Length: 128
Image (cartoon, rainbow, N blue to C red; front, side, top):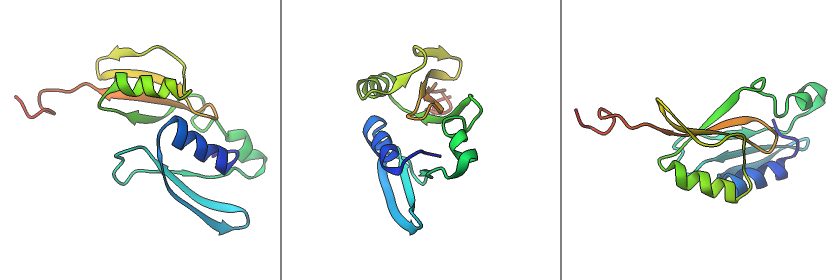
């Protein structure tokens, strides 16, 4: 859920570097707006403008304050630096966990995301 289509498109394409896949008017002031991160084969976000008090209240709280989405990267340090330089607000410093390198950031509306580089295992790299 977003407050405004155009501000959401600007954030996702500008700050996060996503591609605008579709922006189609569907009548009644509604639009079908899809964005996706680079290289996201078959995966996209639908940006839906909130209507009514209940939906407006849910903006930025769609996961009840927990991390909502994961943005996976193959180069954490480069992508972390690029996102910071474009104004993305990280809520913590990067940390290394058993599963990989991660840092939580908040999107335009306050929804929490993980920027995540998964730890490569020998099996994942094709070695035994």
